[in-house]
Length: 165
Image 1 (cartoon, rainbow, N blue to C red):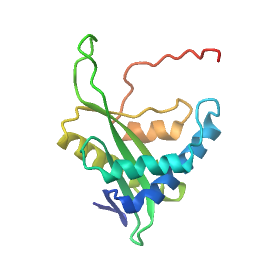
Image 2: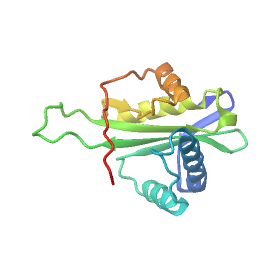
Image 3: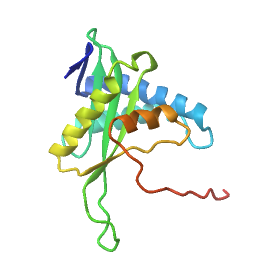
Image 4: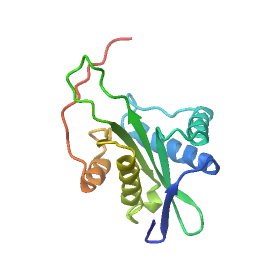
């Protein structure tokens, strides 16, 4: 898929270092947004995650990257299948997945994020997934606008109570 000079494709093990940089850049932005909620994961742990994920071919999860004509990876979307609710719960057992989209600031506004989400939707549909969700921090207005403009809508409310440690 080509969108304004960007190509979206399935990530490979050759993309691991770029995926690590995207994850760390995203973590840094979120840490500035809410330091009590987010952290910067260790690079070696992120490297192991993506290397393991891309080495297998289970079809369980997926990662797509957006790259420039020069071959620079400027964005990614990770699609992580969520477990179906157990039989004793009231939710219907519909397959779902969570998406995590990251586009470097210099590449925003070029359509990379929307193209990545389109790839995620196609993959999810092809793999029997009925719902995609994106966990967005309420202060991240840009992400809320982005996902909303790509057909995501509020669903429910998540209430949290921080406990003393």
